[in-house]
Image 1 (cartoon, helix red, strand yellow):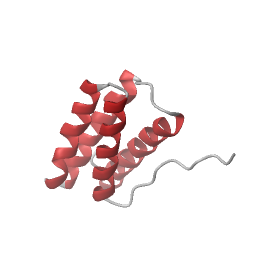
Image 2 (cartoon, one colour):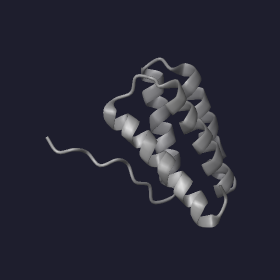
Image 3 (cartoon, helix red, strand yellow):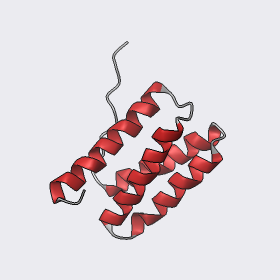
Length: 95
């Protein structure tokens, strides 16, 4: 079975869509507190791009720290998206 590639996002729209999907996955696993944290971050999508990415980064780091029982591909996606956010901040000299 081929290994699935981790998620790659093209823009903040896709980041928003990913966060909304993750909220659903967390709710299905009954991780309601984490789902609310990620949902809160998704609400920043309509604001400044850097603020949205910062809130998304904080929420995803919290998900990693709490280690809910996600599938292997879901965990890979969290790591991949976090890496992309951090790389974006490095490129603009933000973090």
